[in-house]
Image (cartoon, rainbow, N blue to C red; front, side, top):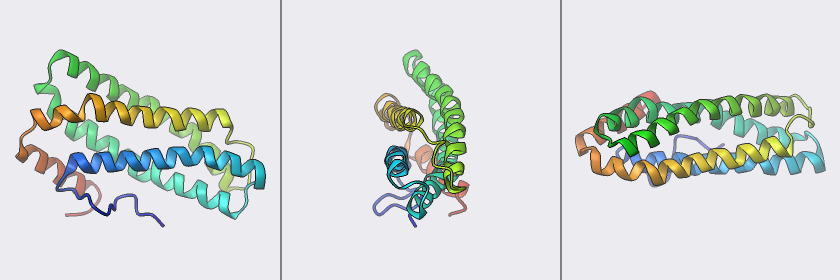
Length: 173
């Protein structure tokens, strides 16, 4: 099983790189929802479908909420007082999207729980496509419109504290 907190080359000592690594997993698991729909059409809610649904559930139930906390409570909170109006608007829009994505996740979550229970009709192409499009697009906006400014606005001590808080949030030191 893939540990959603573990990466081969990135640690909490490099918190911005860790956030991007989390986005890579978001992209992976969001895309897996589309693959799962196709699998369900061909094979129904078999053992492979159930395992796939469970892996998506694990990631988005555990790691994704922690990632949003990393951003909202730590990274964005540190950046907002230093941000110009344009960057502030980007950050505020992204934070609002976290709520929208959270609601979408709950819809996808219910469909995935149905798969785990043997129901292959709840996860639709439309729902999987929307999820697989919106979550990665959100991550890309963060990477392009916000993260580069963190390197400019935040000093090494602040970034190091961000990494420590991220690790602590996950029960690591």
